[in-house]
Length: 54
Image (cartoon, rainbow, N blue to C red; front, side, top):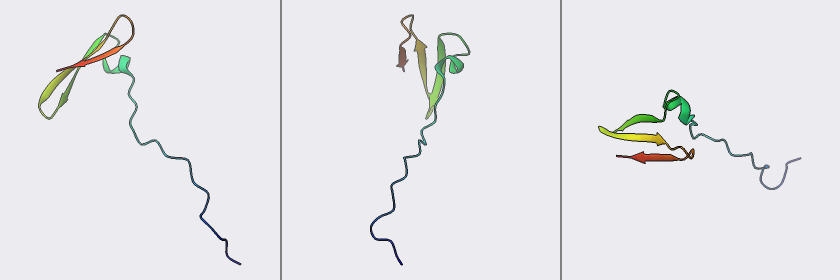
C-alpha cells in the first residue's frame, strides 16, 4: 500500500544567527563591526534602540 499526496510540511528551521547586542558591546553602548574592510559603529541608545552607522 502506498500513501497518496505530499508528506506533511516540516516547520522551517531558523538558520539566521542571533546575537545579543549587549554582549556585542561588552555591556557598554557601542561596538565596532567590520565588513569588507569597512568599519561600522553599532550604538545602543538610551531608549534601547539600535543605530548602525558607517
